[in-house]
Amino acid sequence: MALMMMRLDVGVVMLFYMMFTCGSFTVMKNNDKFVSAYTRIATTVSLSEETQQQNRRFLDRVLDARDTHSMITFLPEETEGKPVPLVVALHGFCLQPEIQEAVMLRLVPYVTNTKKAMFAMPNAPSMASGVGLPACRAWDATEATRPFWMLWNRKPEGDVPYVMAAIDKAVATAAQNNVIVDWSKIYVYGLANGAFMAHRLLCEKPGMFAAAASYTGSTDFALEDTCTKNLATSPTSLLQIHGTLDTVVPYGGTPWWPGSEESARLVAEWNQCNLESPLTTESRLNTNPFFSYAVTSTRYEGCASNNVVEEWRVHGMDHLPGIAGGGLVEVSRKAVDWLLDESAVSAST
Image (tube, rainbow, N blue to C red; front, side, top):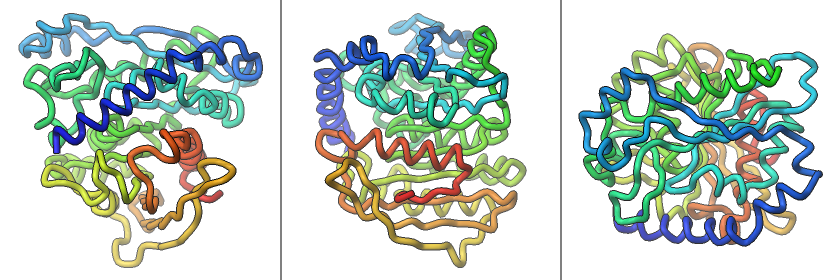
């Protein structure tokens, strides 16, 4: 399983790298249509001294001595002084924000200009070179993913403190540029490895997020006690998106983590939702003007705080939607719609 994940993710990384180096980023810099929609600010996130001291006990401090990591933030224009939502995007395995920014070029102005929200893309602080790849970044997420990580990536609290620091820095960056973030509307959207991280944040920091979205990720059996306790007092909505033909993170799960359907049901249980009669609907998810996937939506309502947990089972979709992942922008737009509209939309809306 580990070799399969590495082999396929290496292919994804190389594909995104070629797209990145062939000029996608240049288009963004030179095309006023995209640039005028937002203000792009490159900044850094520093770990607290306490977290630094904890991490120095582990071998990753030898291989990666930095306590400060990069983050790209995108601020909406013309906010009229009104507080804006913040969407925190957690990238996939070895897919640093600069690469994902280039690939998902049209997602950023959609979030900032159309949805009037701030978008933050922190760079994961953990090294992924322990699995035979060149030095790149990945999230120290759930226990389920850690068997594939070398020892030096295992930190006491994973990368949870870092994401919290990233949110603080994003809010401060916004304030410095006269943009106010609405603390009641902070959302997390994770892709693949980042989706596992989003699931951990959902349980360990539920009061921080209005909702979370997971694309090809999963919760963790080891989180059950934490999730049961925290989500009982701070229920948090979740959108779970997963392709049935995913060859990297199998839809049905593995011995280390539950499948997509079970992940959604577990989170619904922890949110004290009605498990007996979920709403099931069928729709289509368009990834381009010529192609769409059939989607089965399973929606759990009647939760402790009127929140919802929903799974979109995307039939026939692999780890990336469309040809060479070309449908990722459209899928991500739907996820952002679901988050910002407080789960009021469907896959085909």
